[in-house]
Amino acid sequence: MSKSVNKVVLAYSGGLDTSAIVPWLKENYDCEVVAFVADVGQGDEELEGVEAKAIASGASSCYIVDLKDKFAEQVIYPTLKTGAIYEGQYLLGTALARPIIAEAQVEVARKVGADAVAHGCTGKGNDQVRFESAFAALAPELKVIAPWREWTMRSRPQLLAYLAERNIPCSASATKIYSRDANLWHISTEGGELEDPWNEPSEQVWTWTVAPEQAPDKPQYLQLSFHQGELTHIDGQAYTPVDAILHLNQIAGAHGVGRLDMVENRLVGMKSRGCYETPAGEVLYAALQGLESLVLDRTTQDYRIRLGNEFAQLMYDGRWFTPLKDVMLAAATKIAEPLSGDIVVKLYKGQVTVTQKRSPNSLYSNAFATFDEDEVYNQKHAEGFIRLYSLASRIRALHQHAGDDTTAASKE
Image (cartoon, rainbow, N blue to C red):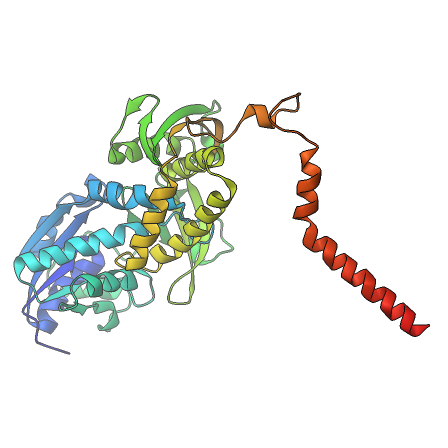
C-alpha cells in the first residue's frame, strides 16, 4: 500500500463506514484526513453534530458545503428538461447528486492542499464509478483511495469492532436493517427484506410517503406554471427550485405519490433492488410530459423521448463531466424553449394525473381537431396523403403479385 499521501479529503457522512475510514486512512497512509460533508438536502437531522463526529473520529477539520441550490438549479432542473428516466422507472435520485458532490470535494481538496481524495463507496456499486469518473475529469492529479476495495473488513460488526478498539464513538449498531441515501430529490432504501425480490416492502421501508391506502380520500389539485421547461409557480405563488421541490415532496408524499420498488441493472453488471421515494419528481415529470404533449410536434417529441433515454444512461453511468453531457443538455434546453404554460395535476391515492393544460405555444387547434364542420381542413385531401404514405407498401404488393403471376406462368 502506498505511503505517499500527505493529506486526503474524505467524502464524509458521519455514518458507520466513513467513521471507520477516517482512522483507517491515518493508520494505513500515515496522512492527515480532512472531512468533507456535502449538504444536498439530506435533512438537518443527518447533519446535526457531523463536524464533531468527524473530529472525534480523527479528522483534522471538517468542511460542510451547502450545495442545495446548485443541485436544484444546475442538475435537477436541466435534467428534467431531458425527461431522463432510467430503465423507464428510476428518476435518478442518487446519480443526480454525485457530480456536484465530487466537484465540491475536489474544490475542498485544492483549497486545503490535499494530494488525495477518498470515498466510502463499495466495490460492487455504481457510486464508485460516478465519483472516480468525476475526479478523473476534474483533478486527474489527485490520488483516489477507495477503502472498501483495500481493507479486509466486510461487515457492520467488523466495522463496529474496529471503532470500539480505538474508542471512537459511533451511534450505529449491528442491528441496522436498511441502507438509506437521501437528498433534496429523493430517498433510497436497500437491504433488509428487500434483498429477496419475493418479499413485499414493509411499511417501515417508506419514510417520505404514506401508503396510498392511507392517503386522503379527497384528491388535491395543484396548478404548476412553467417557463421554458422550468417550474416557476405553484398555485400562483413563486418558488425557488429548492423550495418548490421541498413543497412538492411534502404535498405529494402525503398523497402517497412517488413510490418505486425496482430491480435495476447496475453499471458493474449485477442487479440490485431498491425502493425509491421521489414525490416531487413524479409530479414534475408528469406535468412536463403533459405540457410537451400540447406544445411539441411529433418528430421533436419523439427525439426528446430518445434523448431522455440516452441522458438517463449517461447520468446513471456517471458521465456528467463529459462533452456529450453538454451537447445533450444544449439540445434539451432548445427543445424546452416553447414549454411555457400551466398544468393542473390531481394527486390521489398514490397517483398523479394531469387534468388540465394550456400554453401560449400550444399546437393543439380545436378548429383542426373538431368533428364539426370546419374550413381549415378538407377531408378529401386525406386520400392523396394516404396514397403517398402507403406508396412503398403498394409497390411491394404489386411486385409480389407480378412475381406470383410469373411463377404461375412458368409452371404452366
